[in-house]
Image (cartoon, rainbow, N blue to C red):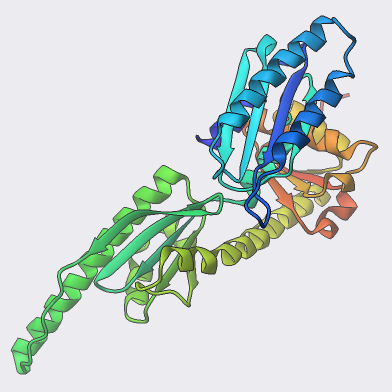
Length: 354
């Protein structure tokens, strides 16, 4: 399932006067291979039921949605490390999704879906591409939610070496160079298609010293801006090795980019431009559809105000309702002076003349 599409679909759900159940479950087994989520979740579900009056419509609706959610949970394969269920019959919503990455077990009951953990998961495990190539062979992978899958492979016919001299050797060398350029062209075309179809923002490139300058020269600006050159991988590397070698690199590059974009937003705010800080200011900008990107401290308890978790959830929902990007920052110090939240704006509202 496309989790970004699910996030946006749920963000558009109107609040309801019946309980809306959002349940995230960590289904990873312990070191003995056993899962323990079921009794924990059932206990939590039953305790929440007591918060509604007996024989009330709200309790009946909650129990029906909870029963359906538990039935779905029990039917999911044990291999899924995490799952999320969103249920409210009154709102016409029942969404169950298996997650390739773990989440903390959490049950939230409110008037609408609780989307903070889902948005945080997508930001933590951003999709990126990996290219491993030389002048004759190339493999392209996409990593999403901590899993890797092959997206394409190019293997060109080998050019046999011919021991010749003079003009014959020069012609042969031109033939080899043309062959290599055609190989690189095919790779770039494949990569362009993958980046477009998968909405990739980061491409990690592992290649040798012969192919590297050729690939650099062939990359259009759109791809060149996304490429990060890496080492330590070659065409003999397994998918598991590629995944293990690139996860930390991609995360580090994401953190660096986030800090740079946040810095520009803070500079814009100080200059009276397209930036905003603080819960009140950013919330108002979200209501006006002004926010292009929302920056949130990853630990919602660091947000200014009394209930940081609820505030963070509201900010995330409003951001996705207006197609604003949401980026979470692990380094709370970067947002400390901004009350834990900042935004890049699409536009500023015109001040009315007195």
